Length: 195
Image (cartoon, rainbow, N blue to C red; front, side):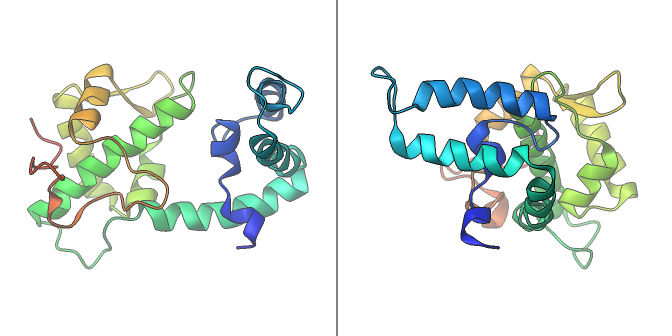
């Protein structure tokens, strides 16, 4: 990816990759006003430049399409937690899938509270988990009250699920692996998505 494509423009504008043009414009106007160098209270020339570049790319359909192509590849690589060669019965892999699903759903709700859901096919793709295994994990997360099915048929994290993600140390950050080796958090608690 080119240097400008390494920046997560969606994160800069604090919008979902699914955001429509009107949403991007509305958020841009708010951020541009906030960070404009002439704003004596919150002006930030460097942040303003980053916001301007993000808007330039995401507001032009051709540039956004080009950016989205590379963005999807980076996003998939960042969220992939295991491959098809991993044993389907591996308990550690099961824990990673559950933690990964909760982290993805946390991020989805955080980025777009009005449309917080992710479809099962998208979860399967992002986590590299086959459908028959994902059904089990979604059942488990639902039974614990950490996720729910939305009216549109997607899955979304609940308030209890958000608390669970925070108990596990929070969701993945840019440049930080989704999971730690061995499935343990820094404080020694088991990161298994179970109670």
